[in-house]
Picture 1: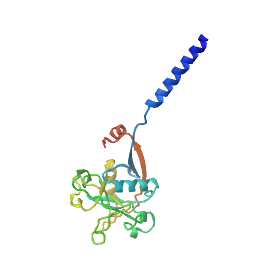
Picture 2: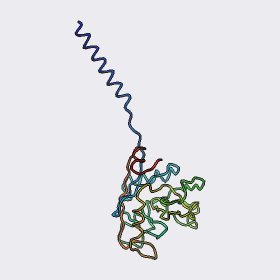
Picture 3: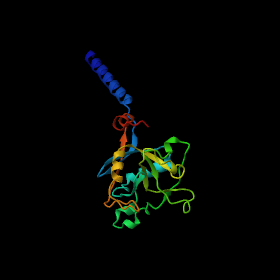
Picture 4: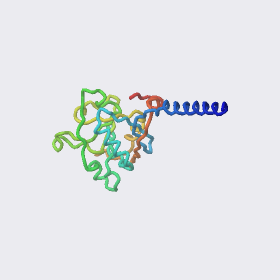
Length: 213
């Protein structure tokens, strides 16, 4: 009888410890960032939660591999590199810059938020001009990366900034140097991208990208 009681106590203690361990171990929360892989290296993009429509749209497109094999079809010295047009996958360079997923994204322009200005490394959404597009709705997929260290403040209030490059701006600098058509900025050789979603903890963002959300 004594032996049975001892075994019973051990079982209860073991069960209690196991239960306690299960309830105290919590998963570490992560944040989603964008990886843009190119033949010149990789860039990493933070998507602003302050522009939820653009963020959700970009994540949805990346999740379905929409951007893969699109190119940086417009590269302008001391200004921007632009890509994300599905037309850039075909063999006709003349239609680059006119394509998209078949919809636009409502503008989320906010010049009162300093995060959403055209600073160095800012990622903005391309769009049609005001005459055709008075609401300044964004292209559903085309985006650009700001190159000058002083930014491009002349674009503030006109285009939606929805992200920033948190690592890899040297890659953007290398891309814009490539030989190109000086009239439209299209590189002579296709510069393709492979876009992926990565999940990182706050600590990993700090350690790997020196970035704090």
